[in-house]
Image (cartoon, rainbow, N blue to C red; front, side, top):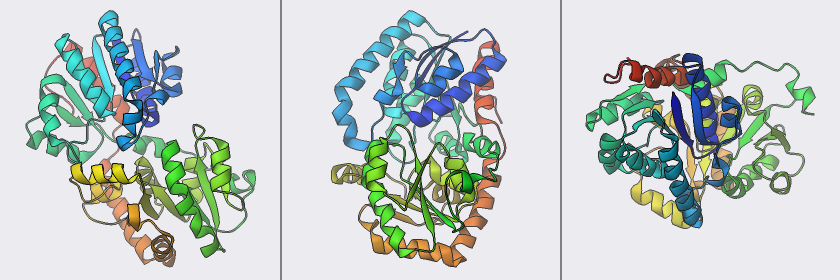
Length: 375
């Protein structure tokens, strides 16, 4: 069968690659058209027609790319009609993908959504569009299913969380410290995000802690899509910057300071105490405050339903507040409470293989097209 697959940023590219591999395992004759990145390209064994690196943006920053995104959307629509897929698979990136879903549905294609729009956080009215355009949804958050169903969309199933499998597959590195020039001191990990704008805004606040905790060494989880010169400028020695070793860093650290995103849940799966931070432009923050309806932004807090991980957002992100939050973790009481919550979250997420479950949902739907079958 033919699968038309869209991911709009780096995280979606990773999840898309895993999904492509699982579809191939079920459907050896599968052919793919994809908007994605290096991971999806490797999984397909051919180039992505659109590189999702061009599409990544934060908040109102999408306005800077609005013409480019419109051009890519128009191109994707043309390619969709020409490719004539059996399944259109959308991965996260809701603003763009919901527009494409409407077009695909009008053309008569079946549309599947893996990691669906977070309508429980903002834009609840989008459920009406989803009801009329999306055939089935594979959700990676357990509470999301109940929310969608309560709002009248029932073709949704919890397929497991892909981070559970990723963390479980990580192998410990006994020589991690010596390989990276780290000494015997305990590590405070800094994860400032994967987007250029995030790193520029957030990393300077993280590095204010270096001189406040001299008995610890600070290590930044770097990503290659952010220029090395920026890391070197914002996090000079004695701060260490490691690339493509985030999981090894999380496994070795004593505490982490993390920009909002999936890294918060990854740290929880590594049982690592954390402080969550975030800062964006004034206009973007004002816009978020207008549309976001949830109290928390940490996935740990959302899954737990209460504040377990401290969240220092916008003006609360300053040297003094961050120092106090880190100190409380290092003293142990807050860290112990977080680790207890992490155990509950691991039990809640379970052990389902998310990409495998989603692949089965999509492929089997053509063999036996019935309402969503995953329990």
